[in-house]
Image (tube, rainbow, N blue to C red; front, side, top):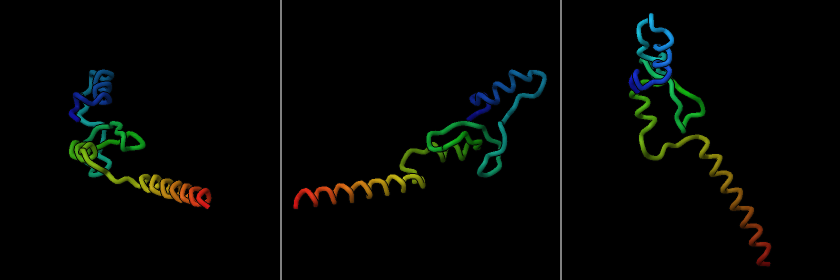
Length: 91
C-alpha cells in the first residue's frame, strides 16, 4: 500500500498541512519496517504491515488458520450424531 493509497496517512496529512506528509502509519507488526494500517478478511483486527507482508497476507490460495480446526470438530460431532440417529432408525 503506497502512502497516497493509505486513508490514515492521507487524513493525517490533510489535518496537519504544516507538517511533512506522513509516509507510514507505523512499524510493521511482523518485521518493524514502515507500514500502513488496514483491515483484511483473514485478520480479526486491523493490522499495520509493510508492503511485503501485505502481499503475503493477500496471496491467493488456501491459508490454514487455527479456527479451521473448530469447523472440523463441529463437522465430526455432527457426523457422529447423524450416524447414531441413522443406526437407531435402521434397527
